[in-house]
Amino acid sequence: MTKQAGLRLAELLSVAEQDIVFTDSGAAALTLALRAVRRTADDEVLLPTFACPRILDAVQAADLTPVLCDVDDTGNIDAEDVRARLSTCSRAVIAGHTFGLPADLGALRDLCAETGLHLIDDAAQTLGTSFQGKPVGTWGSYGILSFGRHKPVFAGGGGALVRTGGPTVTAGRTAPTGWAAGAGSVARACFLDALRSVSSSLPVRLGLQPVPSGDVPAVMERAVTRMDLHASLPWVGAAFLVDQLTRLDRYQRRQQRHLARVRTAVEGHPELRFPALATRQAVNFLALHCSPQRRHNIAAHLSRAGVETTWLYYPLHRVRRYTHAWVNRGSFPGAENLWPRTLCVPCRGWHSDAQIDRLIDGLTTAGTRRSVTYG
Ligand SMILES: Cc1ncc(COP(=O)(O)O)c(C=O)c1O
Image (tube, rainbow, N blue to C red; front, top):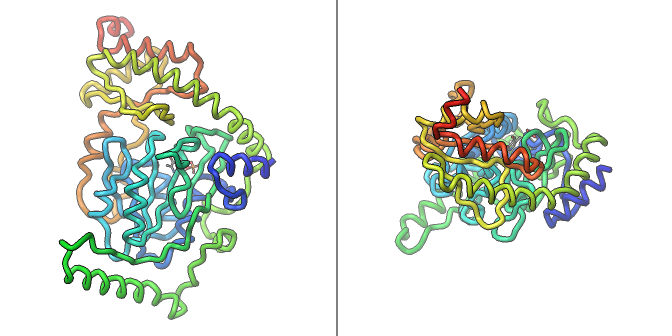
């Protein structure tokens, strides 16, 4: 059954079956990918602040230094902000695809190629979606999948690592950005490159740290945290996964129908805004926007109408248990603007028409006189 699940995933992602390694969870897969690219504990990993906390947990489990980055209007890591927060210790960038909307993978891939970083394409929320015709999860050195709760393909838990290029990227080729950069910048970049490559290989040369390995099973052998103990999917999980993958197309078609109905309901609403979605774009969460002052009232109204909502995330830079865990290189105006206005509503392919009717009824009556009668 696991073989069948692997074959289906490989077909969906257009990768070889042997490049898919099942894991306990998405976070375990991410930990492995990060371990595979890790050179020293000083290596920095750039990740979005508006993201699943499990991403930051995985960076810590891999014994790397997290650098939080700001997000764009879609809630995804902003390539320009990443560029501003790079340092000579930067080693990898994680694209998390918040709400199931693909990050700008083209810009991130170019940035990583230019600066010698690994791109980790974390498709935990995006399985089955493409960006510019290429499956999300296959854009970086590694792809990450999750089959846990609130994911596009739910199999009762589990995850997978997709090996799509790592760890062959060599670190430290910081190219100048054109003539304007000038000869001085070129010399500086070359000097920094040389310095980085000498300093990063020193612990290995001195025997203080094992040679980094891109061999996934070998990395798993050295696993020391609870995140990554098993490289398999239980039989029942594999059976669920195969079943869900079989339905994926149908779910995606039905979700398009649901999204079109909700869009129509929201478009005339004075307080709600529908997100800018590309044609046939699937979502994991439908993130509507509203004014922060009205958000709780609308959420309470929906709740009374039997519809659960969420912010999905509280920005990681605001989470107290992570204070001092990450490197601070500036503020997060994008995330600060986005999270209080986000109202994620249920709109999946497996929701019935009746459930979407209830959502639409709740949305259209929110902010109107009819809403008062619920109170
Ligand atoms: C983008 C992203 N990456 C990784 C994970 C972790 O996946 P899991 O819950 O399977 O460990 C999540 C979970 O929500 C996620 O949203």
